[in-house]
Image (tube, rainbow, N blue to C red; front, top):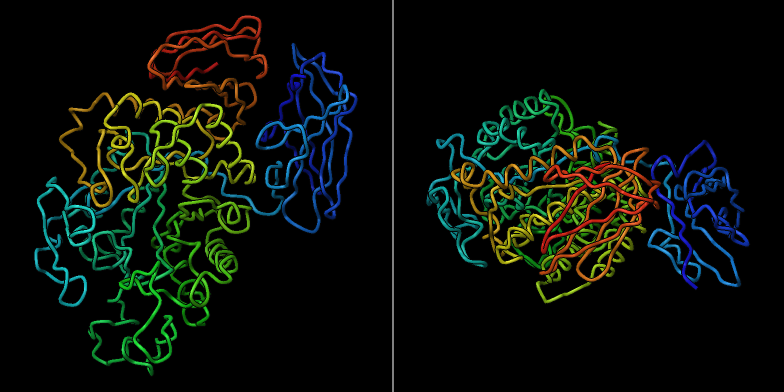
Length: 615
C-alpha cells in the first residue's frame, strides 16, 4: 500500500503556540478518509493520542487540526502524527514518514522557553579571516623576524599580498600578509553591495599567530590588526548601515604567551604558571601536580587548556560583571553575537566534564547584557544536544548541512574519503539532522560550504564552477542562515589549511563579475523572501541525480530544483501538495516563466544545473 500524502510544516501556519498549548495542523488530500488520525505527544513523559479533526478543504487539500498540551516539566514538547487506515499505520515525523512509531530523536519538537533572536534567520553572513582580507594600514603590519611565536622558535614571516601560502603543516601560522580592521572598514561598501548583512570575524584579540586561536590578551585587539577604538568605530559603522557583527571567542585554551601561563618567562614578576607550582595562575590550567605536564587542546601542547573548576577562570570569562563575554557586548563595542570556538570541548578536568553547564552559563552571561545576541557554537560533528534551545542558538552546521552537501555535490565525506550518495539519501540525511532540533534553532543554524577549517568548496569539486554554483544556490534556499567564506564571490580556490586562507585577490573583482552578480542575485533573493528566511520545507522530488523542494510561508512559494547529473532531466513536480494548482512561476536566475497546470509543474533541467522559481 502506498503511503498517503500527509504534510506538516513548522512555521506559524502549522504551529500556533498559546500559554499552555500548541495548535497543530496537517494537510492531506481532500478525499483522504483515515480510520483515525492522531497527534501523539508525551505530557508527563506518558503517551497521549489526540484525535485530529478536519477543519477545512481548499482545492485538492484538506486541513486537519488538534490542540496538544505544552509540557510543563520541561521546555521541549515533542510530537508526531499517527494515521491508521486499512489495517496499516503511517507515522509522520520530522525526518519523514515511517510505518512504525519513531523514536523521540525524530519527532517534531517545540521549545516554549528558549528561542533564538528573530533577526538571525534574516541574515546573510560573510566570514572574514582578518589577515587575508584587506590591508588598510601597512604601517602596523607584522614584519619578518619581528617576534617568534614560541619563545625563540617560529619567526614571523611578512609576505607580499597574494603570494602563495606555505604547505600544510609547515610555516602557516607564522606567515603574515597585513590584513587589518581598517582594510575591513574600507571594504564595507563592497560588502553591502554584495548583499552581506552580518560580518563574522575570525579571532581579532592579541595573539602571536596569524589565525589568533592562541589568545594572549582577551581584552585588546591585536595591535597588528588595529586598536580597540578602531574596532568600536568599525562596529558603529556596521550598525549605521543596518549590519551586524559576530566575533570569535576562544575560551577553551590560551596561548603559551598568555601572562597566566608565561611559558617563555616574559613576566617581570615571575608569577606565570609554567614551572611554578606556587603561581596564583597554576590552577587556571590543568597541570599534573607540580610537574611540567599539562593538558593541551586536543593534545596540542602550544594551546594549554583552561580549567573551569577554577573560580577566577569562571569570573574572568563569564561569571562577573567585567567578564570577557559581557565586555565586548557592551558599549562602546556592542557586538551582536559570539561564535564560541570548540565549545563542546571545554569543561572541568582533563576533558569536557560538565560541559553543558558551562555552555548554558556562557549563554546566560551573554543574554544578560544583550538578550538579542546570537550564541553560535563550533561543532565539526553532531551538535544536537547543544541545540535544544537552552545552550546555543545555532551551530556552524557541519553535521546537518556541510557534510551532506559535500557528499552530494562533491562526492566526499568530511575526511575527504569518497562518499557518493543519491538524492533521496541526501534528502533523508538533511531531514534526519533537522528533525533533532527545534524549528527556530534549525532556522538559526549557520550553513557554509566551506570555512577557514576546510578545503574550499570550489577546490573540492575540482574547479567545476557550475557545480559550485549549484551548491551555492542550494545554500541560499535551504533552511538556516547562509554564510559565505570570503573570496567565494570571486571563485577563490584553496586546499587544506593554510591554503584555504589565501589573500583576497581584489584584482578579480573585475575579472569575475559573473560570480559576483550570481552571489548578488542570491543575496537579493534571500533578503526579499520571507519564505527562504523562515518558511517550511516540502520535498517535491528526490531521486538519482535530481532533487526539488519548496519553501513555503503564507502565500509565498520558492522552489529549488537541482540536477547534478551529466544529462538533462525533466521533472513533473506535484506542486498541488504546496497548495498550488494554476500558478505562474518566474526563474530567479534567468527570468523565464513556467506555469503549473492542474497542480503539476513541468521543469526541464539542463545537465549540471539549478533552477530557482518564485510563485
